[in-house]
Structure formats: C-alpha cells, structure tokens
Length: 244
Length: 272
Image 1: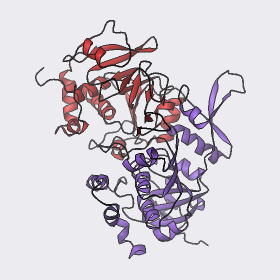
Image 2: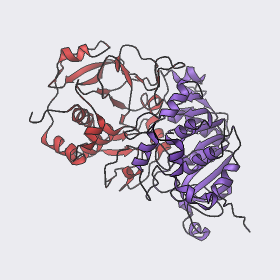
Image 3: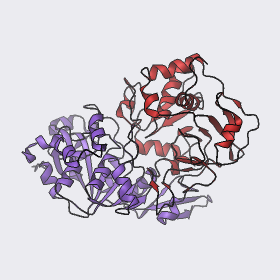
C-alpha cells in the first residue's frame, strides 16, 4: 500500500463493510467511527440504505461532519426527526437491521462491558455505563462494535461486568475483523500488516480462525470517501489509534 | 385570563429544594439546561438526584460542585474527544454519589411508567445483562400465554423536569427545534416542568402552529428566558458546542469559578 492502512481508517472502513443494501442502520452517541462509517458507506457504495442516527436524523445530509456523533447537525437535511424513544422502540420490535454500539471490553461470546473496570461496586474505573447496549444488543438484528485498542484487557476471556449480552455480530479492531459464528466470535480477517499469530497473542479469548485471511485492501472509493469526510485528517489524529 | 409564568433564572432555581429529583433535558453537550444547572451551583443546592439517559457536562459540573447525592443514568460522558466525565467518575469511584445504572431505554421505561400512571413498565431486551440483578429488576411471563419473559422497570417520577427549549411563551408552551431527545417523556413523567428557553415568543405564534409545541403550557410551572443558556453546549440551530470552553472546563488547572464566570447567564438581569 502506498501510505499504509492506518488503524483508524481500517476500523472505519471495516465497519462500513458491515452495511448492507436496503437495511436500516443506526449510529449512536460517543460513536465517531460508526458515524464516519455510515457517512462513508453513503459515498463509497452504489447501494442505498436507511441511515438513522441518535441526533434524530433520517437519511440526513449534514453540511459538516461533527466531532460529536450526537451533534444535531447530523439531522440536517433529514425529512423527519426520529427521536430517541422512536429508534429504541424500532430496535426492540425488530426493525433495526444494523446497530453500531460502543464497548470497553468484549468477550468471546460478543458480550460487552461498558460499566466498570474492576468490581462494579468498587470500580477501578467507572465507565460511561449502560447506554444503548443492554436493550439494543439483544434486540437489533445485527449489532457491530469496534475497539480502538486490541489487547488482552479489551478483548477479554471474562468481562468485569456484563452490561449487554446477545452477542455482537461483528467486532472491528485496528488489526482484526471478527464475526459471530455458532454463537462465538470467529476471526474473519486480519490487517495485512498484522498476522494471525499477532491477533491470537493480543486476544484474551479463544477463537476459531478457519478460513480467515488478510483483510481485503480498501478500494479507491473507500479511501476517497473517508478522505472526503476527514480531509484534514483531524478525526484520524483525534482518534489516536495505532496498530500496536 | 392568564398569569405569566416568566421569572428570572435565580427565582426559578429558588423553587428547587435540596434533595429534589431533577430530570434534565437534552443529551450530552447538546441542548442541556446548563444555565439552570450552574444556577443550582450558585445557590448551593445539595443532595440532588439527577435523572437523565445521557448526562455529561451537567452531571459532571454538579458533581464537581458537590450538589449531587444520586444519579439514575444510562450513559455518562463528555463525548466528542473529551471521553469520560471526570468529576462524575471520581464521585462514583469515591462513593460520594449513589449510581443507579440503567440502559437508556430502561430509564425511559421507568419514566414511561410514571407518565402512564402505572407502577412499572415492560422494556424490550436486557436479557443476559448484569443490570437487572444489580437493580433488582423483576421479569414477568407474558400473562397472555406467548411464553415470553419481559423485564419490568419500576416507575421513575422526577420531581421536576427541566427542559431547555428554543422558544417559549408566557403560558409555558415550549418548542424545540431539531431532535427533542427524551424531553417529551421527561415532561410527561415529572411532577412539575420548568422551561428555560432561548427566546420568548407570542402566544399568537403558538396558536398558529400548535402541532409544533412539544410541551403544553398547562403542564409547566416556571419559565425563564436565557439566551445561550445551553452554553458551552449546542442549541440547534442557533449555536454549536463551544469546544474551547469545554476544554477549559476539563482543564484541572482552570477553576470552576473561572468557568462559571464566563457563563452567558451572568449578563442576564437576575445576576446584574
């Protein structure tokens, strides 16, 4: 690759690749990579999908790309405001095809912890908390998360607290893409500059890697879509994602 | 025959007793009743319960000032590039406040129970989470025989919902532009509703387009007009987040007093 594939661009692009034609796809609060993935998919892929977001946006056309993934500008150009109660209810009744959700820890079943590091009652770190996960992860048709750090403290054998169960359909890190297979996360592909051995060494849970390959390099359109959203590289710098 | 509900921000906050349960509108750095929150600090309120699906700056600054006893919240963060809410985090870790951790939708379910006038409310999902055991939530089997189990959340009735609106009239009718987040259900669940608004509009303008009113005035007890009152957050479409001001707030070498002194409500008559 000419400039290498940064961990940040790897996450955003591989999140975008989970988006499918015609589906209702959601990005929420505290979710800059997912917001960028949804906006990039609109520019990189020929198919249409229904993008809704936590700012109430329905197929929005924002005039700028906000730092905050809940910024009201993400509803600019919408034909409707689909507010918080509405998108949660849509999800619990089975109408959310793909839901992007954040996580601090992920286990081999694709469950997540966003509540505390250490015991909940005596936390080493009090994390943001429940958010969308406990309700959306078990009820969305597919949920996908990302971690900007791939390590045994983020990809864990045992969660400090099970905030949300139900199981992620997909997990993207700076070096790997996992998908759910037979109820557990299985490796789908790894960053071309990493290796299967490295992914195993940096993952706290056991996983199946049958059929896994290096991740397909980004297409010109995928590269251009992300560049058009982040022309100055500000999101890339702010995210501070490194492969190692 | 009508009596204006308009008062100053300080008069509004004088109506809030220590220990009150407050539902705060908006989400993270967007359209929160932040001028109201800062006035709580100026008036040294204590023992407050904060109810909000996605608090951030509001709960953080109240924890920083020692005003909070209890939080019932879904996700708490400063968001953007700011990460965790540092003073809130410290207050929970040091057990200075009691946290009832929710998913956003379970908190909404509790508010819905209060709004519907029933003791509890079913909520979708939650299966497999440790949250029900933590909060002693019950699960019930569908009494109509589907065999499905559903988690039920007890009613959450805040004393006061405080909403930052774009426009209000003297009767208390309020409009919000852009997403109204969870403000509607908060306003229906709480015993009282206070509205802080960017702008006073005529009653006649509300009569022309009543379907744009989010909160009808008969449910509202107090109104204050505070331009830029959601600072340092955004209020669509009037202003964006003041990121340098939030950075300054997050800077531990910068004092709370210095931040409070920069707040736009200082220029209002109540503080003249």
